Length: 244
Ligand code: NAD
Image 1 (tube, protein in one colour):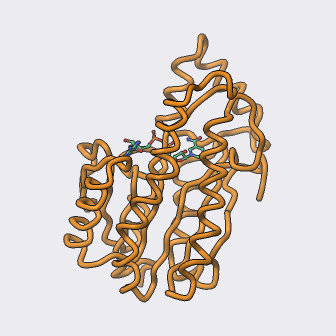
Image 2 (image 1 turned 90 degrees about the vertical axis):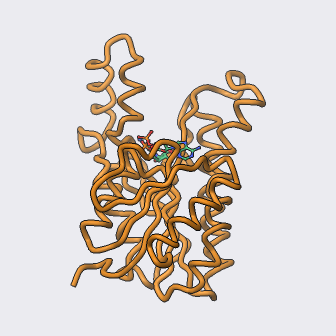
């Protein structure tokens, strides 16, 4: 039997990068998987795509309901949709703070709120949030992004406490620098993308970037009954960069 036989999972931001690798891995291990994304047009094969914007509560509620209907319930919610921001506190104005907090923090709140009534009916309910080493690393020029991920870490612990007696586990993964289209876009914006990539790799203790499928593996562990006694934790997937 596969680890996820018969389990039903929803992955937000599942059309690209870490989310896509997670959706593919869960499906390969026997789960029925739906993806919620701004643009699910690339979602294919066994994955079901649902278009929604995690900043729009009505679209989230509609997509979660449609996904649960199509899957026949919901056991696993992976809150992975997120966006980046660069700069110090002087570089981002209030509108930018609200925009990024809305996706990275309130996005998780909205999706989880919509999913909780469904998760309560599951015998193997798990929520996994994609946090970041930025939550605790004190990275330069990442004030806003780090603050959103610090909030994701705290939210993970608070939600774990709130729902443990309902049989719902809540954990997060803290990836380091992961080779996804997101990082590709950052590299493409550099004057010399190849040199920038080499510099990024040189900063990793492992000498290479983390792969999306390695983060997916950690998410899958926290989503599966294999981690049935684990809730309110953060699992680092950072090639030894930071830990915690
Ligand atoms: P990505 O850009 O490749 O994929 C993100 C996906 O989220 C996209 O498909 C996008 O359409 C979707 N999305 C964005 N805003 C959305 C919204 N408002 N509503 C619905 N969907 C939305 O990025 P990625 O690198 O795979 O990042 C995924 C998560 O991993 C993010 O939460 C990010 O903060 C986190 N993370 C990434 C890294 C990294 O180095 N790539 C490191 C640590 C944490």
